[in-house]
Image (cartoon, rainbow, N blue to C red):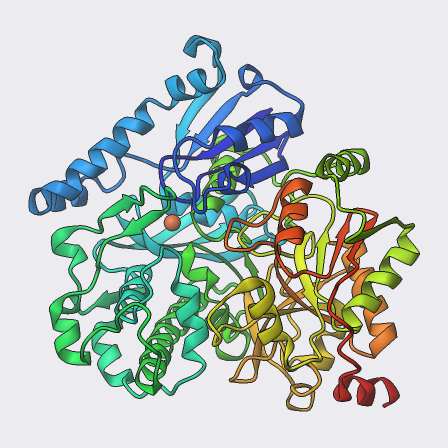
Length: 597
Ligand SMILES: [Fe+2]
């Protein structure tokens, strides 16, 4: 039984394939066509999935598409009368969906009738929830999806029991936690699609001075229902308009807030205007308001379902700061967050929904890691290096066995070098989780500034994340629940904040990745080796890219290595070091204290 999930025709296009109930591959189109947040038909991702499963398109039994034109038709029609332009745009998208069989046939140079798969339209939030619950390790759980908007709803919740999910409720347009966060992100001068995580980072710099006002902007109504103060927004009258930038084909979301928001909170921050305490406090107030609502929703959901496990998906589930508070603020004891919690994850969710809810197949798969993208063999990697004609005067190349490879890599990181770490299959979801990562020494406070200056060019307020050997989590963090997909931020233990200053944010938290031996043996061994050398089984882990989608093929890793000031590239078992790499920075004081302690 082969099920192909396809998220198409809007941002974060992706594909996923299931063979006999097991996920075989899942990949976002942006990693392959190199267009950030790529939309359209993800033909490359589909091809990649089919290759991984060793099948052709005409062998696929079911195709699951996460969009249901019939869902909430009454609400859609009501708003269509008020917002004709938005309605027309929706009709255009629906037309594209109805032509997906023909588009697929064109892309794969087939006759549409050769595609013998049954097509299924799965409602947006149902697919989000399925992407979390059906791949979670839980036999039963409460499930929550929250995002900007999908099929005219912004949130949905359910209880999962074995191979079934029972939907318990929903919040429909125009009330939306995602829209709330995006509108305020825009107000704070961050207009790029997907900039919300920047404001989440900024929030830690301020105090929630404006929380009372923000409680008017968003609040819990009763039970699971939340409401926006609609006077502050414009999307309910003008529609959330999405256009595509000509230059780089990235999405642009139109303005979501109204003049009333500016009247109440003051003028918007112009893009590029320096950030001051007022902006910090606005961001902190927005984050605090979101957390208040989320904590209330989680508690109500726990009460309604009597479940101890929670599954999360939808863009709001990327709010790792809020997620980090679940264990101290709610009765939930175990939480699974889909690593591709945004719309990319819909391809996985739609496919699993078909497998279990529609075809009534038993559950057998647990997403224990996120390495579902393309992988390249040692010979493919070697060929890529040879094709690159590495300048022998500038780069020293050696082929190493696993032991020496780990030793050399850990030593380079400990010496303060910036290391590109490229191994195995590419990650599913927006986080680099130790297969397409740039690694650095977390013990050096200056490392954040060095990484930004030499490679990442990010805003100074944005934190970098740590990876930690899972068994050491409690030694460094105040929470110990695993965070394998970097979806929780926990307070760093006060006595460890000076030990790992680089990935510790200004508020003393860090958005950690816990690495288990079973999920990623090689990366886990690297963390252990670094721990042996320094006493600290933690590295700073940031995505392997330079203002582009995360690298996928070895050629992209090589190109990034050569055009940036990265010192070392570990490409499979090849160790490449620039001869003119920056001199070792000397030992960090805290690191020495750790090792001799
Ligand atoms: Fe969504």
